[in-house]
Image (cartoon, rainbow, N blue to C red; front, top):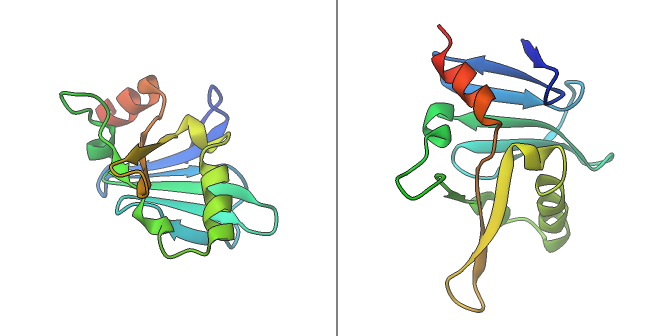
Amino acid sequence: MAHDRAIAERFDYDRESDVLEVYFGDKRRVWTIELTENITVGIDRQAETVLSLSFLDFSRLARPTTSGPRSFPITGLAELPDSERELVLRLITSPPVNRWLDVSTVETLPDSPFAVAHLEAPAELVERLLTAA
């Protein structure tokens, strides 16, 4: 497991499976929510804190498109009750998670906005992970 003092989180990157795990606290039982097909978040409900983020297909998430960062709809919140959805949105848009995810809203129609996210990991960390032998 690597520890990067500049960002004060622990992380583990498995190059073979292309999965990046980011830990913000001790490993313990968490409420895991699949935000997108490739991004999950582990939350301690009682403490209302995020303990982990997982990025599947990390290299694809980190690779920008010709028009900017690759964004993904946060579809995993749709089935949650309003209070839980609000908690998750508050947590993923606050430190330390917002150093790893940029969350915004797309409004296709006035009554149907939806949240999207893209990887916001420090560029030097992404470069180091993806180019390390």
